[in-house]
Image 1: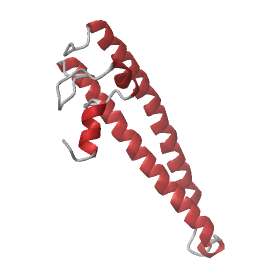
Image 2: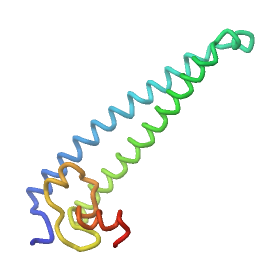
Image 3: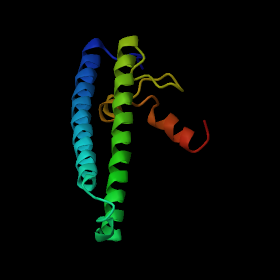
Length: 130
């Protein structure tokens, strides 16, 4: 098995990663807008009117905002990992398992471009065998 992908395949991966990064950027922006809108909704609340807001509504708003922050952090981390995948393409280590050194299958790299381990090594790692 070869230890590197061809230049044409690497270009294919680069394009797929760039497309995913664009989609993630759009997701992050829409989440930011949602967070901004939720903050503005409570911006007009005065200390006198705070008691007119039902506690359950305030709790739901708080939960939604927390969820949005969690999603934004998750998407930001994914974006960083995609960026690291692009760096691995440039340095020539993209698609090579960090543990066994074999080439990770193309199908896996298209679906999970930030993967650094083949499925077998990842499973062993999760089970504590590696």
